[in-house]
Image (cartoon, rainbow, N blue to C red):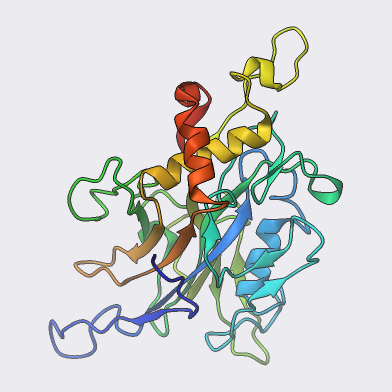
Length: 319
């Protein structure tokens, strides 16, 4: 079983000198931070203030959102931020996640961290997505979000074809966003640093900003993926019930999806970011480690007993 990385990796890109002087892009740092996020598509807690997205970017900025003189290129990100009793709480993932914890559902299927029909503050949630937060520091090189690319790969046996690359994102959770896909916005914030005393930072955090706008740093809640399972709603009652889902309760649907991911050997999910700067691509990555839970034999028996599971599940869900 792969072990979860517990450090925040930073890559410093130092390309060979193409001509006299420092290479363009030298010194750029890319930090990739794994976290479990609410489902972007259906969660009521993802957007807004204080929503999960806002809390995640605030944490990456060191705990103060878009202050006049912070963050700087020396500001350390926080590993957690917000109210831990709420689904808006941000926390860096430093331990392995279970297969059930990393599943997203649909709007008719409430779930949270592998539990169907959660109560209280989590009652409206629709599962959890493995997400890779992002900090890019230019450290003297101006960058733009139009240069940002992303791809992800998982190590399962389904769809595995050759090496994992931006042009060949492999596995069930394989995905790719080419440069030119991303825009500045509330979850992808560009910063032009001031001087720390008299000139304030400038932030690019609204849709419609030119993605070619040059900045000193980018703080982003990031992209990710998770397996998805849906619950068929009864046409007459409008209820997501076992009768409409092959006799499976909502909890059994989650268990079955977890059994499926276990059965194909999904134990690792890796996200990669890179900047397409001229002929160079400074990049970095980080990974989730995924464990089997509960007892694998129990889940596999359930999965084997329900051949119609494909009717209820989707391949994956991206963001």
